[in-house]
Amino acid sequence: MTFEELNLSPAILKAITACGYTTPTPVQEQAIPLVMAGSDLIATAQTGTGKTAAFVLPALERLTVPSKVPGKGPRILVLTPTRELASQVMDAACKYGRGVRIRCGSILGGMPYREQMRLLSAPVDIIVATPGRLLDHLERGSVRLDRLEMLVLDEADRMLDMGFSEDMEKIVSRAPTERQTLMFTATMEKSVLGLAEKMLNNPQRIELAVRTSSHALIEQRLHVADNLSHKKELLRHLVSDASLTRAIIFSATKRDADELARELSRNGYPAAALHGDMNQIARNKTIERMRRGAIRLLVATDVAARGLDVNGVSHVINFDLPRFAEDYVHRIGRTGRAGANGIAISFVSSSELSYLERIERFIGKRLPEKNIEGLAPLSVLRRISGGNGSKRPGNSPGSRFAKPGGNKGKPASSGQGKSWGATAKPAAGARPSRAPAHQPVIEYRSRRPQV
Ligand code: AMP
Image (cartoon, rainbow, N blue to C red; front, side, top):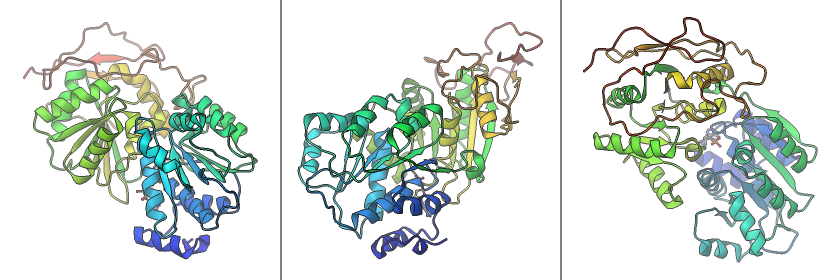
């Protein structure tokens, strides 16, 4: 299928060609005709699939016809969980909409009100917003939704995870009932379906493979780490390799992200942290520096990196494994983009075994374990299951309600206070000779020579 066959206006087709796109991606091919026909839609598609254009292009198409309703409120509203994702949707709207006369802007938490008030003071076509701040404006009366024609809930599952359910409901209650509603989600959990039931009207459903099929160009591997200092040694080894041109390193907590970025910088590697405690201006600056190549290593948390679109990321390193299997897929999707090869390396310690098992069940394969000469782990991680797609009752792959086995539901943290390059010492601990099910097992082979 070609973009011409999707019946888009010449001005939009021209912008697509200028972006260098030749054929629609599968989600675009399926979603655009349905959206242009006016259907509500629920689509499972992740970042990296081209989902943004799948809703932005038909939204722009709608805007080629003038609104019949007087007023200043937006005709298209896109709600996103994070400011980064909102910025990317805005960028896409500007890029694809360059030939269409539109007025658009974002309403984001953590950003000054003055500019937002200016945006809302004249008729606006597209607003991309995070739910909290938009609701704030609705309650102050600085924006109304009576002109709204299309509502897009982007990464709806993540918005639910982040506790935006009530805000979303309040926003929707102020929108006209005859609007078109599109929902994009990485997972089709019960809570997402519940939201869809409340907000969508007889939706069409598109399910794109969430698994690694879209990650064919990404080499995935695993390094077993004895402890935090061993993880740091492994990281130092990896980042000293010249083939790593640009990497995103994921850590479990904001504090760890800061600490790792500081340690990497101290050791001469251009690095910076990206997490939710940074204000939006600092985050944008960091992303821009990464894009320009001033930063080679970005140490990020999941929320901050969600939707992050930086080209040329050669490596994704999971310094800590994510708690949710979907996040693993999201994380590794930061590399191997636009036909390039990528490498995704995960560190796993004994306390993260349950996360690893969950990821492997979700992606349907075992991550191959690799050792680096001189940095082999002293411990052997014995994986109980994984990679066969089997489901345990009450512990479904990637379920946000699943109970991790060994760490009582707390995110695996890389810990604090150890200095960069400290000698790894195996933690003491009794080792059962046979693993009881669900228990992480760690065995010690021999002592790594102390260096
Ligand atoms: P998204 O999933 O919307 O974050 O898009 C992922 C990346 O794919 C972005 O960098 C887009 O610019 C790019 N993209 C979107 N649609 C196409 C297409 N049809 N052909 C090539 N690249 C595309």
